[in-house]
Amino acid sequence: MNLNKIIIAVNMPEETQKPFQYLKAIPFPPQAEIQLVHMITENVYADGMELIQTFPSREEKKKLENQIHIKLQNLKSNLFPEKTKVVTKVLFDSNIRKGFTEYVAIENPDLVIVGTRGRTGMKDLFDSSFAQHQVKYSPANVLILR
Image 1 (cartoon, rainbow, N blue to C red):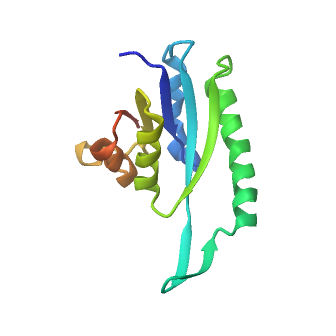
Image 2 (cartoon, rainbow, N blue to C red):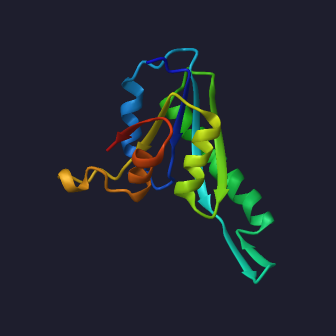
């Protein structure tokens, strides 16, 4: 399998990032583009057809986006210190599972990587509904790290 584009779904709690340390041992091709993508739930409140409020607000979105980009840059430096084709993205959607899957369909990567909390037992292998959703609906190959 050629790996020209890889999307890594990143959640901010550290326990969900621990499995990503395994990525340091994978010899990704030098030409591969790696995207570190974090999704944030966006809530939209409406009254009938009239939009009342969104959370986070436009100002809060910008602030959140900047804070998360800093964390993603730190993760990028930790995992891929010598790769130059690593980009960070922060995306907002009301349904992060579906929104991420749609983003993957648009980007058309060769591989999607998702980390889980690392619970043990066969029942807990896919302990995250996000990971389950990606395995079931992702248009790309999915690698789950735990």
